[in-house]
Image 1 (cartoon, one colour):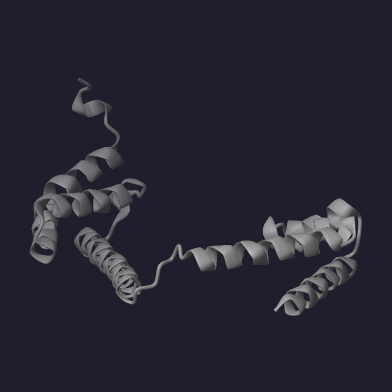
Image 2 (cartoon, rainbow, N blue to C red; image 1 turned 180 degrees about the vertical axis):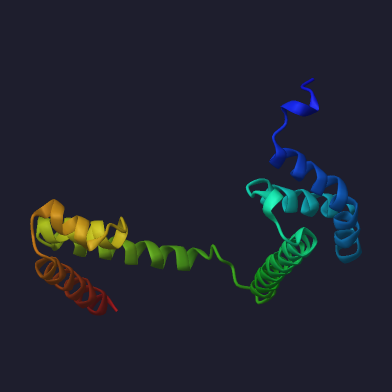
Amino acid sequence: MPSASTYRPAETAFEGLDLRFRPGLVAFFLRRTGSHAEAEDLTQEVFLRLAGMDTARLQSAEAYIFQIAANLLRDRGRRERVRFDYQADAAAVDGAGIDSLDPLRVTASRETLAGLTAALRELPERTREIFILYRLESASKRDIAEAFGISLSTLDRHLMRAMAHLTRRVEAEE
């Protein structure tokens, strides 16, 4: 085991913060979460965030540490609200008798997809490739223009031509 003299001052300062604030942080989180395991996890997260800092230079370590703790609780609350809202929405859909895998919807979606695929094949090859790179592969306009050796305005014309064609085809099928 290395002697205490081999530790750097930042490590001993960090250890000092851990010894000084861990019990208070665990109690802080425990009062708010009601779960010892979650309190320990949140306390560990505080110290993980502190680990990347020069703790020896903190002017008010207590204020900073408990501000991190308060921010973690706010983030936890936001995540819980998002989960709750998602679960409520999913339950509402289930309760409404809507089958997300309704065979008629699946068939209609497949037909729409087949129509769009056919419409894409009707486009000139270069226009089709540009459209696919931009809309489906999420490539940047600048990268596509460079790859094809064209200006951004020419690329925009290809994209507009493709969108106009696809829009006409979809409207014609409806």
